[in-house]
Length: 86
Figure 1: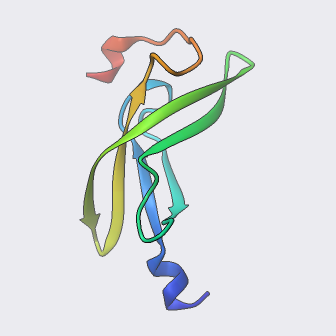
Figure 2: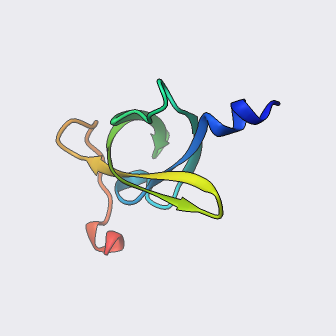
């Protein structure tokens, strides 16, 4: 892997919703992250599509990170405890 390939990556942090606390390495597109990410996940054995919107960015130990917030209105319905997201 070249240094250029490493520079074109970032870490997506999912800060709430069903994927709260999850991290994923992603590739920058045109030097930027996606403003909206669709993620598939199994909840109670059923695959669901969850939409997340980018809210901010920061650098941690030289690594670019973008935080994504859950968009419940556009995502597949799923029950999760909102109090766990505080």
